[in-house]
Each structure stands twice: as C-alpha cells, then as structure tokens.
Image (cartoon, rainbow, N blue to C red; front, top):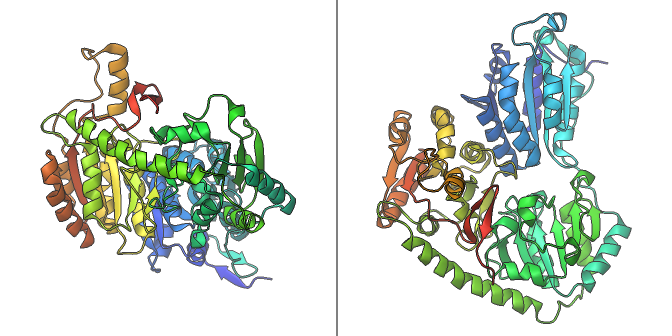
Length: 572
C-alpha cells in the first residue's frame, strides 16, 4: 500500500537526506540539476566543489567528525573515476559515506552513450555495497539499505547509481523512512570472559586505541580502563582525539610515530590490548621483530578487521561495550608491580627528550625558515585548546603526529588520513570537519605546500561554503619526502628535483577569494601572525598562513627517509 509518493526520483533522494539529518551535501553534480532544484527548497547546505576527489575528501572529513553519514553527489563516467581516490580513502578510514551518481539510461547501455561506463564494476572494490536503480519503485529500499550499510558493522562508503530514465518518474513509498542508526552489538560473553582472564594475567600491558574507538569513549571509559590496568596508553594516528593526551598514562602515537624513549615500552610489554585498530603497518612499525614476542588481544566491530599474525585472542563487538564488559569483569584488579611507575618515568623522559629534540632541530634550520616544533608550540599558545587538528602526512607536517610536540587534551579533536595517505586529503577534509563541528570550535589544518597546492582550486569553494578554517601551510618548496628519498639515492647534485625554492602564488589566490593570507619566515613572527589569522577565522574568514620550513628539519625519531618508511634514530 502506498503511503507516500514523491514526484520524482531526486525528490525522494532529497527527502531521504532530510530524514538522515544531513546538514551538508558535497559534490559536483552532472548536467542534471534536479537534485539541486529539490535541495533549493530545504535548509541543507550544499557545497559545490571544483573536483570530485576533493568532494569525497570533504564528505569523509564530515563523516569522521560528525559520526554520521557524509553525502556526496556526482555525475557519471569520468566524474566517477575522479572520485575513486576519495572512495579509497573513505573505505580505509571506515567513514560512513553515501555516494550518489548519475547512470546511463537503461536503453542506451552498450551503445557508446555519452560518458557511458560500467560504473558498478569500477566502484565495487572501493565500497561496502554498490547498487544501480533502474526502476523508480526500488529507490526507497535502495536508499534505506545504503544508509544502514554505511553506518553498521565496520562503517564505510556505499554507492547508489540512479539511471537517467527514472530521474523524472514518481516514486511510491509504502511506509515511513526507517530510522538510521548504528547498532552496536555487545561482545560474546564467553569471548569477553576468556580475554579478560588473559588481560588479568598480563603484568606489563599496553592499550592501543584505533580509529574504531572514535565516538565510543563516552564518560572517558577508555582512560578509566587504562587506570584499572596501569597500562601505557597509545593511539594509532586515526585514533587520536579519542582519549585525552594529557592523561598521565598517555604515551603517544604507536608505530611509525613512536620515538625514543617510548619505544622501549613496546620491547618490555607482555600484552597489547588493541581497541578498534586493524593493526595496519603504520601502527605496528617498530614493534618487536618476532611476532611471537608480543601477543595482542584485538577488539573490533567487524571480522574483516581481524589480524591474526600474532598470538593472542580477539573479541568482536562494539569497542565501548567491550571495554565496559572488561572493566566489570576485572573490578578489583591490581596493576603489575612497578609498571605504571615505569610508564610514568618513560613519559617524563620523553618530555625532556622532546625539548632536546626540538632544540637540536632548530639548529639545523637555516635563516629564512622556521622550525616546525616552534610552529606547533605557537599554535598551542594562540588557538583555543578545543580545536580539531586536521593533518596531512608529508615530511614536515609529520612533526604534528609526535607527542608531546602536539598534545590533544580532553576537549581536542583530530582527523588524519588513513594508511592510504592521499595527498590533499587533510586540506580538503578540513572543510567537511568545519561544517560538522559546532560553529565556535576551531578547525586547524596543518598541511604541506605540495598537498595544499593540489587543494588550492577549492579556495572559492571554501569561500562560498563559509567554512572558516585556519590553514598552516608548511612550505619546503614541493614534495619534501620524495626529495629526501631522491637525495639518498642520487645525492645533492641530481638533475632531478621535487623541491625548488620559488614563490608559491598562494597569496594572490587566497586574497582573490576573500581569504586572509600571511607568510612567516622567522620564528619570532609566528605568534603575531597566528594570532591575527586566528582572529580572522574566529570572525568567519578562512586564513592561510604560509610558513617557510627546511628539509633538514626532520621529525622526531627519524634519521632519514628510506622509501615508504623512515630510518629510525638510535633507540634508548
């Protein structure tokens, strides 16, 4: 029985987006403007992008920050292939996202139609589910299933293609839209009890918090669990912002971003409890070489995230409910003798090492450039502590991954690229983060000049969207990580170059689109420049602060680049 009818397919899509509570839609629609015509009559913000990849990045940033689906709308053919990098990142980041695309008319398939592409085949490796809707009456069920799959299980992107022939057809609906909510299943009691016994037996545990714990740390349950165990508390890069980094048990970011003396804890630990982490290579880089030396108890929502190369055990279920279950079963547990004190002592040693490392790095920076550590401390002084830090993953901006050079307290947030690290993600995602967060919360993007240059075409998008972001652009003349690898192979006199000192041209573009712009070439200019830029952002204007940095200013723990990963400094 029909209880509702929408005049067109795009009217049904617009109504379902309203039902989802979508506050922003990102994209670059195809030639059919019917969806925009429907959204014109709503209060949904529409961010019209210049590039489909950036639109996906923005929607991913929105989804990660908001904890609800990001929505992106594109055309067909090359519009879809342009979007695939963004889908790859959304899938790797486990971001709930709905991508809606045009599709060639059913009666024109296989005829060489304009922008015809087998889009389902192209997109399936990048999404949780892909569907093409050829009949209007099937659209409501497809929309509801897409939303349910995006937010349930391990979250991720889904793809819905509307065939052109149904765009103007009426869409009958046989019931109200179903509620869209993530179901968070509790862990199996037997698995919970068995793993609790294993945790209880550990005397030197470490707790690793991954991106799957995002939005699941209600009441600071994870920090309380760490205190119960006396466990050193690490995050993965994507898990940052979940726990308070000013907590006395917090030790930094695991793997690639763990510097001496914190790396000693990984050699001394007898158990890792991994919450919402796939244990990807960047998170486990530098762990003991022999897998059998460090068992892992892994708690994840989806079985596809299990990693079983190491001894240990696993629990499938919501991270929050799993932590609560363990906390109840381990009530009265006493931490291993001396382990919390050992964690505290190494944490104190790291603070001194970080100060020394920042001073050493500053000596390697030539005149006309600024030590990145000084940029981070100035940011800490100038911008309120509840800021959301959005990052890239280049050579100099990697400084911001290292604790305590950057410390995110209980009120702070973080969005970083996944292990895919697509260039330009952070610069674009910051726009989505800004639109997901409350109006007064600062959003700061720390990005390299190479990444920002890929994003600059979206500056008019930023201006049109009214998304006030503070961009700190670390300018080393191009692609610093690639240059450092090239120098290692070819030496300083190579005829090839990835970095060249030259004017960036950012000032003209930024000012042309109404953004505030400043350039800093000396450390003593930082506070004044950042303060003035932050005042602009607080007033609703995006600000770009371009900061000259130097290639030798390598992040902590790195003695040089070596392909995908760095050579480590000597361990302590």
